[in-house]
Image (cartoon, rainbow, N blue to C red):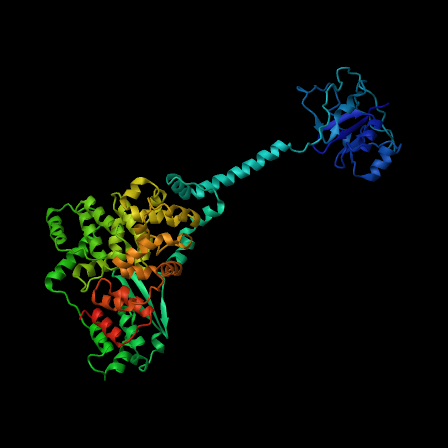
Length: 586
């Protein structure tokens, strides 16, 4: 049995020499792939996929012809071939090499053949065996391995890794909620609850504020709504200027709509048309009085102009601290004059203290604002606007920027910004507050020292961020969240319907006696009103109109009472006259 066949795999490994019978055996059992090549002696190589060649030379008995191109010296079979340094060949080209070593006979070398005597293409060189006993294929090939499927354990590990990554991602994404829950002693791992909490500010805000901060009343073509900003709680109106005619101005609704419309957003064309409509009316007509008030100039005297210039310089300075003794004394003198009747005046005082280095006094003023209930701060509207109130209002944006950039601890200021976004709805003011970076404070909102700065407001912030189930559970703890705190900080601003029960009646009755105006606003919650009516056997509306009308005589509660009267539909000439008297400070 002549061993004069060679196999060249796709990866260019040369196997053999082996016998033709062994090549046929490997071919039939599929060990030789279509991209592998074979040849006999000095014949030419052909692929296994070449069926014609396989049939002719491998399956048939025809001897492979001479190939002059391959007549160069065969470096693989000429002379002594060094054996492999290590026995590391296992599978080559998918062939089970252990089958090649079943025959223990020496591998004969293929000697160089002399040129053929004639040019017959069918002449076949005689193949002779090698005389070198050392040239023996002693490589011990390992058995062909069959690719095995991954172990079940490996599959489990892969899934565990994926789940672990998802859990880690959720822990990082919801870290604020988790930290708050840990510090407050309650922890929930409900994915829907976490998602609901993470989107509390974006998704819950409209539903939470719609009763108070986004309420509006539409009567005919006029819309009335409360705008809560630097001037406190103010009722404003809006209407399509182009649709209003002189006939409309004869009705109480449109007269009240014009009086409550912000004059700064009325264009000159409308004012001219309004003047033409009321020019023939008496001077006591509400619209004519309003036009006179709008066109009335309010010049500053020389002393106030000097103060205004000085304050503008201090507010717009690039310095965070005034060290010049003369300037510092001027600021101290101004602090003796600046009142604290409105929020802008309080913020101005806080800023001036900050500029002279009295950070503690500055923070205390801001904390006094956030520790005051929204209901009280909303009523801080002066009967006559002060000089300092007007200056602070005009420079409020710049004051906010200076506060935010100051290197001192800004926790009190950040709480103040969150207070604005929580309980105010004037667009410009809220946008200023939203520009404040409060991310670090939000992460620490569960800490005790933050709670000590403004306990009731921090309670509101924490409750706002949790799910409804957790919120109701916590609010039932009246030791930590007393009902008098809930009534002013929680009930009007968050959804409390699942919490409402007869246990609230004592607190509701107390508020009705001590703060009837706030009681009326609390009754906007229909379920709360039903509980009260069921307990007392009467509706809360009867007898409220006289109280609201009497409240129009006091500046603090004027606007909040006016809005409720409009809501009740009590728009009449008397209400219009009372409103213009209040607006024009007469």
